[in-house]
Image (cartoon, rainbow, N blue to C red):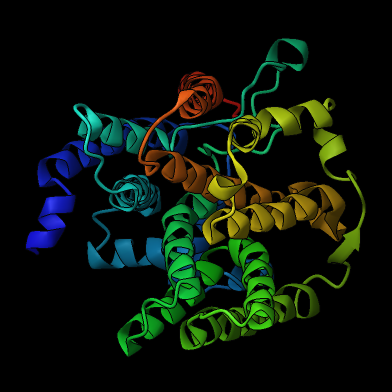
Length: 387
């Protein structure tokens, strides 16, 4: 406990929670309780139906954790909270947890204003958005970009803290850490929960872990086999297989997965190439201003590859049938880009000396995404449409 207190300041964590909670509650209170475009209403209706024992679609039943959590909030409060207010509580807690996890993961920096910057970076990580420079041309804030801040889909919002924790444990696994049985069981439960919440991160992160396992075996490097295999690979594959069965074999007969480059995204927006670059502007700046030894650590390569797989899913694959325009492979790119931002920001933070390269990456690379996030936050707080 003493060591933890030396690395983390409880006062900073309390301030961080309050800021994140106020920002989150304000916007989600508006977007959930008012007639605006989004997925909350539909998911909350499914939660009520699940609580009553009524049928819900197989593709929702395949990842029911959000509905179960909303239903639990209704049950535990004896209906003092309805589905809408329960979801406000859940997503607010998720955003606050995301900021706190990132704050702890950043670690302490021994500089004059290190703690202030640490809190500010942790506040902004759930807020950042693609640089929406093309909005004056097509009027779009969200479509065509790889979204980071999300105020319309509850499951991807709740997935963010799970994804950060999975990333932290996976990095430790490749550094031969977390060898206790407790950690292995915890990671296994974390993988199952994240996949049952939304399979998008597991779909991209699991192949990245698998590739690095083979690479470590080839290089004869040390890695934590029980944690990575029992914690990630085995439960992830089993849950994904069950979800495929529920979604495509037990559900809509016309539904499936097809290879269709740009087939979905081109329906929503033009300028896809430019919007892709504006979505990953900060990672590109970090890539171009860093030396090889700074981008070579396992966490950077692991997350870059996971993002590549997520982007491939978004731009090259589609669901057939009634869910074609839902763009459900879009979530894989979004959640992996989020953890890429978090990883690169932490990497910059933990470099012992900040040169002009680090300042360029933070000011010219990261801050435009923060500014865009503020603009997008205001838009979603005042407009019916999120896109």
